[in-house]
Each structure stands twice: as structure tokens, then as C-alpha cells.
Image (cartoon, rainbow, N blue to C red):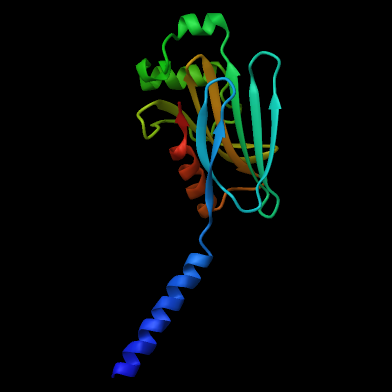
Length: 179
């Protein structure tokens, strides 16, 4: 009986170690230009590209060639008219949900609306989520105004996101922190 328990214990230990080996490693990405922000992304196979605009705008791309997954992050400085119309650090927080959906459509947050909905970041900031389908691919998008910037995060790929990739998108969106 003792030998059986030892074999069982070793088997469970090996099973646990093998499942840990397949677990994805994530890393926190820090973006300091404009308004500092950070979020988590899977580390394995990531290729990073960034582009700095002329007027304080920034775009970042994270590509995973093995799975064709693409993650885009943009930070666009709001013009003075938008800052006056929507003052404060996180103006979406003060807009009623239906009005925010109308605003999202009006300013063209996404051309291909499939599942526009309102949500919240873990620290309570209100955001607009959108599931989209376009000629370039499909995926999920998160948008918000914050500290004088428009932020957008898109997780997409040609075809559709798998359920695992949809869970990944949720984790990426939930990890966003604006400092």
C-alpha cells in the first residue's frame, strides 16, 4: 500500500509539473509616452512595433506570428474642443450608458459594430467594448477617454478569435492600468 501511495504521489507531482510547463507566461508592458499606462500580454512569440505620431499620438502593435493574433494599442491626444466638451480624467464615467453608446457610434469608435456594450476596468473606469468583424479580421476592442487622451486596445486576427483567445482578450483588457 505504501508503494502504491508513493507511485500515486510521484504521478500527481509529474502531472502538476507537466501542466505548469504548458502554462503561458505573461509580462507587464509599460507605455510611458503621453499618459503612462500598463497592461499584461503573453510573452511567448511576441513581436513588438511602435509608431510615434507628430502630435502626441502613439500606436503600438504586438504580433504573434504563430497564431496570427494581433494586439493594437493606440493613444491619441484629444483636441481642445473634445477636452472642453468632455472634461476631467475619465469623462466616460459621467455619461449615461445609452448616451455613451450613441457617442461611440457618432465618433466612429468602430465602423463594424457587432456587440457594442459598456463595461468597467478593475479600477472602475467606464469603457466601451465592441466585438467587430471587418475585411481585415475580427476581434474585440476596448475604448475610453482618459486624462486628455483617447485609448483603444484591439485584439484581432484574420478569421475569428477562438474561445481561448477571447479569454486572453478579457485578461488583457482587465489588466489595463492608467497611471
